[in-house]
Image (cartoon, rainbow, N blue to C red; front, side, top):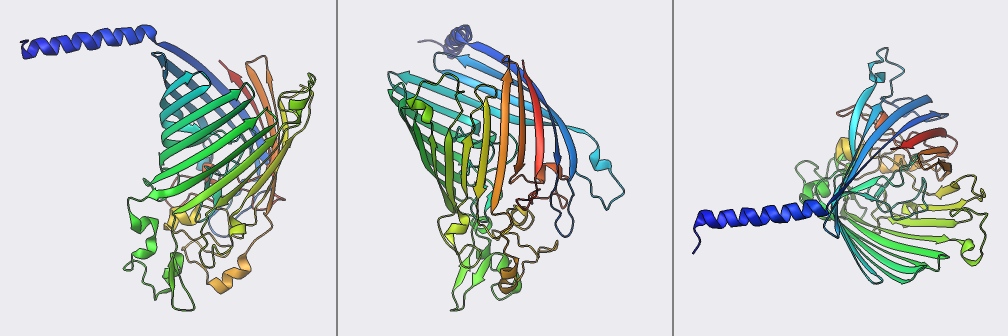
Length: 451
């Protein structure tokens, strides 16, 4: 029999040999990038009360470092982070402009461990950590609704080169079968912790099924069960706390609805989102070498941000159905992509997370709401329904030069939020859109280099 110390020594020796073997098999790749952004908000909105006017020019510089460590035959670890020069908006009514001072702010882009196994035509993939998620390859600005949105209240986020920057914290599994070189089917499952919008720490489940037929048509459909498993029902459905929200007081209308027949409905953050998308590429039938790989593609995406209706605020499912469609114009390889996208969404309330963060309420922001958090009477808010923002648009162009430089340009009236430009909480952060109608717009350019 080996002594206790001898067994410990043997174990350490085995682990050391294993670690050395893994190091011998490992491969470290390091890359970097940087970009200068310059643009102008030509026309934007200012809400009644404390708000910030962003009309005018803006500039920013970002840089980042990406490391990928391969270990064994199937595994990798990823760490990708960036640093930005953050400029805050200033309140034109305030003589103090200190908020305009430059600040350097680090941010995490990707941090995960992954495993990939390929067996014939079958590919199995899993990753865990802080995960970038993009399921619609064509979406340049609008779309990607499944993960860039909220159910109750509806919130949709878009912006310049944000379509591939949504993040989930959790586990992702994928299986793909390649029937032929140009035909495949793929399934993705995500199990994540809610860390983007309040209420936090609940567990959500989503799944997406995608298929491509001979490179001509690509289809995708998925569902997202937001806040599927709750850690605190009083935060998920605040109306259950009758001590904080008595049902006979006016404050109850921020969390619930007293119906005409005496029935009471409690609003909730919990909901299920659904998504469907399609891409058509007519070049699949022709050998046209003068077209670029992205030219002539037609694509669209539709979502339902909450399958269940609730009285008054969420009584019409059609209002919770954003629709995006786009087209890539042919540039004959002069540009990598030139896309035009439109969005139609009849949601009658403000596209804002203001009530979520400031009042923990699943009721949407209404036009005449004041800074004290008062929600208007249902009868009054009927006059506040807004539809001057039902249509949104975006024009995007990009070109990569010599594999080391990329130039991009965008003109848009989209769903970009003021949050990134407003001071940090408490009290002073803003969660409304920069542009609240299709007539308000901006342009922005970027030059990026790769190391």
